[in-house]
Length: 567
Image (cartoon, rainbow, N blue to C red):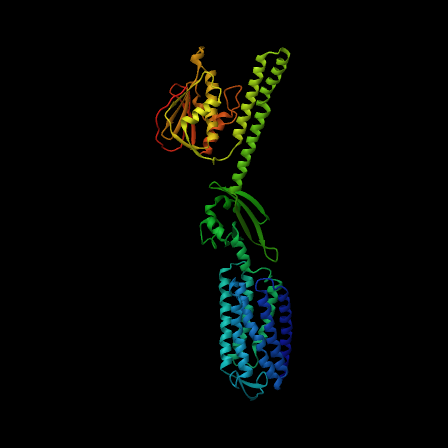
């Protein structure tokens, strides 16, 4: 028996060295979640194991009792370290404050006070030597010891419950880590129960600590236990705005963050097959079905219900480089796509403006240069008049281009009168023999400058195209009449010119579309832009006289007021 105990003691010393090494290594990585607590746990177990070994080697002497009591110097921090580690590893760090640490220190202080200052028998009673006892002394536990035992196993129970619960909800990616910790926790406490309540000749707890050391060594060096806590990883993933899914090799979803559940509108997506879970995203499901083991990583963009998603698919490998699943990172890029479309539209506008400036301005500029040369030669006032008209044409072109370039929503809205706008715009345009008639008046809320541009462009368009298309050689008969009147939802501007054929009424609002050789095709495009920037609608119809009629609607049903006419 004595030889067996000595061999056992040396085995415990080896275990103590292993655990002490693990404690030092873990302490070097204490910045990781739970690292400090795990290091304290291992250090406590090291002291416990070493004291039991020393007590056996000094068996029967009074110093062995010192080691029998001294092992609690390791037991106490081991219990507290286990509890703190469970809180940290399962994401309950918010409870680790000074109050918690103070409460954890109460029981050890009370225990050691009773052990060294209390009466005999309060913690232990030692009747005398014993040839069969592990330390060579008969030791009878007192009430404080049993209270300590209940307290210690209470901490073990709470710690184990926290980790077991986390093991059940953490998903298969973390199960190896969590199960390793659980096994490492239960082995020594199982041995402790057998030592206290069973009929054993030796204390099994230190022996089973060897198993704890080997398991934690695997967790540290192979399972990469402290590289990142599952809770820390989960917190990072849950904080992402992007949807994250983890799919195993059987195409079963084993992980999904909150954003992923919201995207699929399914809280129970974990555990479903990819075919069932992604049924609402058929475009993504198609990408999943096309995957095979040869595909390392891919990125694609899918469109679903007018929404765009950037999808990144990355493989997951275990420590043997075997494929165990894939990660799907899905980020909505609808806003980005809209900005790209807006940028493309702006670039097209720039191309259009460049075309106007390079082509349409070249003609009046050439005319002005030629007429100016003739005017200098002949000193003819008419040539100067033609130069002035060419300059006016260039100025008009520049104004139209700049007006169309101001592609912005209306913000400066004021209350305006329809009749006042029409008259003001009429005075800004060379209307020649044309006449203005205003039938009815109403209030308009909008940007005055933009609405003036609208009326100016419509009037100029009617004057230029109406006069050119007159049905008579008589100048009076060819004079255009432009009528502005109210409608239940807005207003209309009509003329008695040749009108617009039905098949061309939609395309005339497109830049570049014009029936005049000298036109830019910007006038009605500017009109449409002003209307849209106010949130209204516009369409081209036919007036009662067969001419063009521009109808602006969407202003709201405001009461038309007294008719007024002017010419």
